[in-house]
Length: 276
Image (spheres, rainbow, N blue to C red):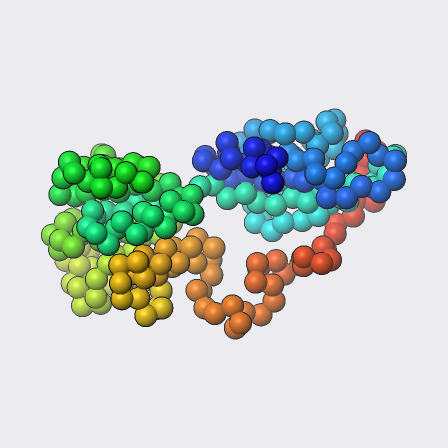
């Protein structure tokens, strides 16, 4: 696993990538299982499979895998034997922004850190002590709600949770966040509070489906740690396009690979592939 980490880690911080691994070799080919190469969306590569035409072909296939999100095993028929290459998607590091700096944010930061998520804590009350309290966060910002747009980095890949415990702060933040193409937007608080927020923020009920509020999955959470688990689990489910239901109710592979299984890969045999 050390080899895999050394190839993947430098790229997980920035963008989607595909990891190509030689999983089996038949015949007299000099290639051996375990060779790896990482290909990013922008075409940057690291690691070596064998060089030449095979790598160029794998790079092309990797781009298709990143667009579809479905891993494949591709068989290459070469003059020296057959080579099977497994190509899978490597997700970029999840970016989470939490607006709020109360005690209930601490376990969210701890759990996100454990998952290797990039986490930003924004203290909308601008208390200097928050920098030390949230030392495990990647970034701690002291920022008033009205200055959020100019101070906080947000994109379509950002997940955001609003939990300032200050209604006016939440209202200001929700007004600015609702129109943004965020990957996930959640807000702490009961339904009545959420409805009031939406009415005052926009008056547009269409936003009800975009805003995850009350935030989190229904797991019976009561303590701050349980609530953190509920929130992080919902974010993960949304990012994975899953419902958060029990796995025993799921039909097919729990990994969502309808055409692949750990025992027998659905192979794509390139009989017409050039010799390498």
